[in-house]
Amino acid sequence: MKPVRPERTTFPIANSSRHECVVTDDGTRTLRDLTTGDTFHSESGALAESLKVFIENGELEELLSSRQEVQVFETGFGTGLNFFLAASTALLTQSGSLFYDAVEPYPISTEAWRSLEYSKIEHCQPGYRQFADSMDLYSARDLKIVSDLVELKLFHRDLESHFRSISNRQDSYDLVFHDPFSPESVPELWEVATFQKLFKILKPGGRLLTYCVKSKVQKTLLEAGFEIRKTKGPAGGKREVLIAIKPFKNAEASSL
Image (cartoon, rainbow, N blue to C red; front, top):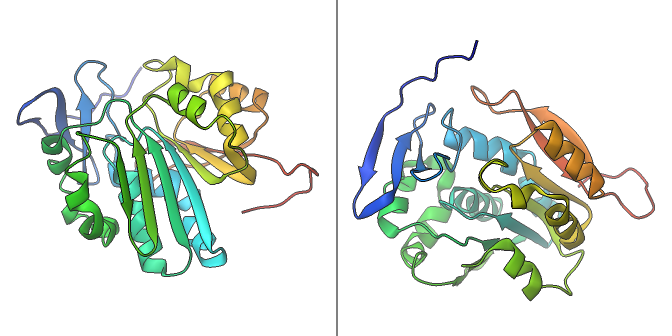
Protein backbone atom coordinates (compact mmCIF):
# COMPACT_ATOMS: atom_id res chain seq x y z
CA MET A 1 0.00 0.00 0.00
CA LYS A 2 1.43 3.36 -1.06
CA PRO A 3 1.84 6.01 1.64
CA VAL A 4 -0.65 8.83 1.42
CA ARG A 5 0.94 11.94 -0.06
CA PRO A 6 0.68 14.80 2.44
CA GLU A 7 -1.10 17.96 1.40
CA ARG A 8 1.32 20.77 0.72
CA THR A 9 0.66 24.44 0.24
CA THR A 10 0.69 25.52 -3.40
CA PHE A 11 -0.08 28.80 -5.08
CA PRO A 12 -0.15 30.17 -8.62
CA ILE A 13 2.54 32.38 -10.13
CA ALA A 14 1.73 35.67 -11.79
CA ASN A 15 1.75 35.56 -15.59
CA SER A 16 2.56 31.84 -15.64
CA SER A 17 0.33 28.97 -16.71
CA ARG A 18 3.30 26.62 -16.80
CA HIS A 19 4.33 26.45 -13.15
CA GLU A 20 2.95 26.64 -9.65
CA CYS A 21 4.90 27.19 -6.44
CA VAL A 22 5.04 24.43 -3.81
CA VAL A 23 6.04 24.88 -0.17
CA THR A 24 8.13 21.80 0.66
CA ASP A 25 8.37 20.04 4.00
CA ASP A 26 11.50 21.91 5.16
CA GLY A 27 9.78 25.24 4.59
CA THR A 28 11.63 26.11 1.38
CA ARG A 29 9.89 26.39 -1.97
CA THR A 30 10.10 24.74 -5.34
CA LEU A 31 8.16 24.75 -8.60
CA ARG A 32 5.87 22.17 -10.13
CA ASP A 33 5.69 21.85 -13.90
CA LEU A 34 1.95 21.74 -14.56
CA THR A 35 2.44 19.88 -17.85
CA THR A 36 4.45 16.92 -16.53
CA GLY A 37 3.60 17.10 -12.83
CA ASP A 38 7.31 17.05 -11.96
CA THR A 39 8.67 19.24 -9.19
CA PHE A 40 12.07 20.85 -9.61
CA HIS A 41 13.17 19.64 -6.17
CA SER A 42 11.87 17.17 -3.62
CA GLU A 43 8.59 18.08 -1.99
CA SER A 44 10.03 16.49 1.15
CA GLY A 45 12.49 19.39 1.32
CA ALA A 46 13.95 21.37 -1.56
CA LEU A 47 16.87 22.80 0.38
CA ALA A 48 17.61 19.56 2.22
CA GLU A 49 17.78 17.63 -1.06
CA SER A 50 20.10 20.08 -2.83
CA LEU A 51 22.45 20.38 0.13
CA LYS A 52 22.76 16.62 0.55
CA VAL A 53 22.79 15.43 -3.06
CA PHE A 54 25.02 18.08 -4.60
CA ILE A 55 26.90 20.19 -2.06
CA GLU A 56 27.63 17.56 0.58
CA ASN A 57 28.03 14.53 -1.69
CA GLY A 58 30.20 16.60 -4.00
CA GLU A 59 32.39 17.59 -1.05
CA LEU A 60 32.36 21.04 -2.59
CA GLU A 61 33.73 22.91 0.40
CA GLU A 62 36.65 20.49 0.67
CA LEU A 63 37.37 20.80 -3.04
CA LEU A 64 37.38 24.57 -2.91
CA SER A 65 39.72 24.52 0.09
CA SER A 66 42.20 22.20 -1.58
CA ARG A 67 42.24 23.49 -5.18
CA GLN A 68 42.71 26.80 -6.94
CA GLU A 69 39.77 26.14 -9.23
CA VAL A 70 36.71 23.88 -9.13
CA GLN A 71 34.73 23.24 -12.29
CA VAL A 72 31.04 22.26 -12.02
CA PHE A 73 28.62 21.33 -14.80
CA GLU A 74 24.87 21.18 -14.17
CA THR A 75 22.33 19.34 -16.27
CA GLY A 76 19.12 21.31 -15.78
CA PHE A 77 19.72 24.68 -14.12
CA GLY A 78 16.03 24.89 -13.22
CA THR A 79 15.36 27.28 -10.36
CA GLY A 80 19.03 28.06 -9.72
CA LEU A 81 18.99 26.65 -6.18
CA ASN A 82 22.00 24.39 -6.71
CA PHE A 83 23.97 27.29 -8.15
CA PHE A 84 23.14 29.68 -5.31
CA LEU A 85 24.21 27.05 -2.77
CA ALA A 86 27.45 26.32 -4.65
CA ALA A 87 28.24 30.01 -5.15
CA SER A 88 27.59 30.72 -1.47
CA THR A 89 29.90 27.86 -0.52
CA ALA A 90 32.68 29.36 -2.65
CA LEU A 91 32.15 32.88 -1.33
CA LEU A 92 32.11 31.71 2.27
CA THR A 93 35.11 29.39 1.85
CA GLN A 94 37.16 32.24 0.31
CA SER A 95 39.66 29.79 -1.14
CA GLY A 96 39.35 28.28 -4.60
CA SER A 97 37.40 29.81 -7.50
CA LEU A 98 34.17 28.21 -8.72
CA PHE A 99 33.50 27.93 -12.46
CA TYR A 100 29.90 26.83 -12.96
CA ASP A 101 28.51 25.87 -16.39
CA ALA A 102 24.87 24.88 -16.81
CA VAL A 103 22.31 24.18 -19.51
CA GLU A 104 18.58 24.82 -19.34
CA PRO A 105 16.42 24.54 -22.48
CA TYR A 106 13.29 25.84 -20.74
CA PRO A 107 14.25 28.78 -18.50
CA ILE A 108 11.68 29.79 -15.92
CA SER A 109 10.20 33.26 -15.78
CA THR A 110 11.44 35.99 -13.48
CA GLU A 111 8.13 35.85 -11.61
CA ALA A 112 8.56 32.09 -11.08
CA TRP A 113 12.05 32.21 -9.64
CA ARG A 114 11.34 35.29 -7.53
CA SER A 115 8.35 33.43 -6.02
CA LEU A 116 10.82 30.95 -4.49
CA GLU A 117 12.08 33.58 -2.03
CA TYR A 118 15.69 32.42 -1.97
CA SER A 119 16.54 35.70 -0.28
CA LYS A 120 15.09 34.14 2.90
CA ILE A 121 17.29 31.02 2.81
CA GLU A 122 20.42 31.49 4.88
CA HIS A 123 22.33 28.80 2.96
CA CYS A 124 21.82 30.74 -0.28
CA GLN A 125 23.64 33.80 1.04
CA PRO A 126 25.92 35.46 -0.05
CA GLY A 127 25.44 33.98 -3.52
CA TYR A 128 21.93 35.31 -3.76
CA ARG A 129 22.93 38.84 -2.81
CA GLN A 130 25.67 38.85 -5.43
CA PHE A 131 23.79 37.27 -8.34
CA ALA A 132 20.07 37.88 -7.84
CA ASP A 133 19.86 41.02 -9.97
CA SER A 134 21.56 39.28 -12.89
CA MET A 135 19.18 36.34 -12.55
CA ASP A 136 16.28 38.61 -13.49
CA LEU A 137 17.66 38.25 -17.04
CA TYR A 138 17.61 34.42 -16.83
CA SER A 139 14.48 33.89 -18.91
CA ALA A 140 15.55 36.35 -21.61
CA ARG A 141 18.99 35.18 -22.71
CA ASP A 142 22.13 33.17 -22.00
CA LEU A 143 24.05 34.47 -19.03
CA LYS A 144 27.70 34.95 -18.20
CA ILE A 145 28.21 36.35 -14.71
CA VAL A 146 31.62 36.86 -13.16
CA SER A 147 32.63 37.83 -9.64
CA ASP A 148 35.92 37.59 -7.76
CA LEU A 149 35.47 33.89 -6.90
CA VAL A 150 32.52 32.69 -9.00
CA GLU A 151 31.82 32.50 -12.71
CA LEU A 152 28.47 31.31 -14.08
CA LYS A 153 27.89 30.44 -17.72
CA LEU A 154 24.26 29.49 -18.36
CA PHE A 155 23.13 28.31 -21.78
CA HIS A 156 19.55 28.15 -23.07
CA ARG A 157 19.96 24.91 -24.96
CA ASP A 158 19.31 21.22 -24.57
CA LEU A 159 22.06 18.91 -23.44
CA GLU A 160 22.61 17.29 -26.83
CA SER A 161 23.11 20.68 -28.50
CA HIS A 162 25.56 21.64 -25.77
CA PHE A 163 27.54 18.44 -26.25
CA ARG A 164 27.88 19.26 -29.94
CA SER A 165 29.24 22.71 -29.06
CA ILE A 166 31.91 21.25 -26.73
CA SER A 167 32.65 18.06 -28.68
CA ASN A 168 36.41 18.42 -28.21
CA ARG A 169 36.23 19.02 -24.47
CA GLN A 170 37.12 16.24 -22.07
CA ASP A 171 38.46 15.74 -18.54
CA SER A 172 37.27 19.26 -17.69
CA TYR A 173 34.88 19.12 -14.74
CA ASP A 174 35.34 18.09 -11.13
CA LEU A 175 31.62 17.62 -10.55
CA VAL A 176 28.48 17.06 -12.61
CA PHE A 177 25.20 17.98 -10.93
CA HIS A 178 22.78 15.75 -12.84
CA ASP A 179 19.44 17.27 -11.91
CA PRO A 180 16.94 16.95 -14.76
CA PHE A 181 13.36 15.76 -14.36
CA SER A 182 12.72 12.07 -13.76
CA PRO A 183 13.61 9.26 -16.19
CA GLU A 184 9.91 8.90 -16.93
CA SER A 185 9.61 12.52 -18.05
CA VAL A 186 12.92 12.95 -19.91
CA PRO A 187 14.24 9.42 -20.60
CA GLU A 188 16.83 10.70 -23.08
CA LEU A 189 18.74 12.39 -20.24
CA TRP A 190 19.16 9.08 -18.42
CA GLU A 191 20.38 6.95 -21.34
CA VAL A 192 23.81 5.39 -21.76
CA ALA A 193 24.77 7.81 -24.54
CA THR A 194 24.12 10.81 -22.27
CA PHE A 195 26.08 9.35 -19.37
CA GLN A 196 28.96 8.47 -21.70
CA LYS A 197 29.21 12.11 -22.75
CA LEU A 198 29.06 13.30 -19.15
CA PHE A 199 31.73 10.70 -18.31
CA LYS A 200 33.95 12.19 -21.02
CA ILE A 201 33.80 15.75 -19.69
CA LEU A 202 34.52 14.72 -16.09
CA LYS A 203 38.08 14.64 -14.81
CA PRO A 204 39.36 11.24 -13.63
CA GLY A 205 38.18 10.93 -10.05
CA GLY A 206 35.35 13.40 -10.72
CA ARG A 207 31.84 12.75 -9.51
CA LEU A 208 28.41 12.76 -11.09
CA LEU A 209 25.79 13.40 -8.42
CA THR A 210 22.09 12.70 -8.71
CA TYR A 211 18.96 12.09 -6.70
CA CYS A 212 17.85 9.06 -8.72
CA VAL A 213 18.84 5.57 -7.51
CA LYS A 214 16.60 3.47 -9.75
CA SER A 215 18.22 0.17 -10.65
CA LYS A 216 17.99 0.97 -14.37
CA VAL A 217 19.86 4.25 -13.82
CA GLN A 218 22.53 2.46 -11.80
CA LYS A 219 22.94 -0.13 -14.55
CA THR A 220 23.18 2.58 -17.20
CA LEU A 221 25.84 4.49 -15.27
CA LEU A 222 27.90 1.33 -14.89
CA GLU A 223 27.59 0.67 -18.61
CA ALA A 224 28.86 4.22 -19.29
CA GLY A 225 32.01 3.48 -17.28
CA PHE A 226 31.23 4.92 -13.85
CA GLU A 227 31.77 3.33 -10.48
CA ILE A 228 28.71 3.93 -8.32
CA ARG A 229 27.80 4.00 -4.68
CA LYS A 230 24.65 4.89 -2.84
CA THR A 231 24.66 7.15 0.16
CA LYS A 232 22.06 8.14 2.72
CA GLY A 233 19.51 10.61 1.42
CA PRO A 234 18.41 13.89 2.99
CA ALA A 235 16.52 13.90 6.27
CA GLY A 236 12.82 13.38 5.64
CA GLY A 237 13.39 12.62 1.96
CA LYS A 238 14.62 9.73 -0.17
CA ARG A 239 16.28 6.91 1.73
CA GLU A 240 19.27 6.87 -0.65
CA VAL A 241 20.84 9.01 -3.36
CA LEU A 242 23.64 8.31 -5.83
CA ILE A 243 27.30 9.17 -6.38
CA ALA A 244 28.90 8.03 -9.66
CA ILE A 245 32.70 8.31 -9.94
CA LYS A 246 34.88 8.38 -13.04
CA PRO A 247 37.77 6.00 -12.25
CA PHE A 248 41.36 7.01 -12.62
CA LYS A 249 42.92 5.50 -15.72
CA ASN A 250 45.44 3.58 -13.66
CA ALA A 251 42.54 2.12 -11.65
CA GLU A 252 44.17 3.13 -8.37
CA ALA A 253 41.73 3.97 -5.63
CA SER A 254 41.48 7.68 -5.04
CA SER A 255 38.97 10.23 -3.83
CA LEU A 256 38.21 13.86 -4.53
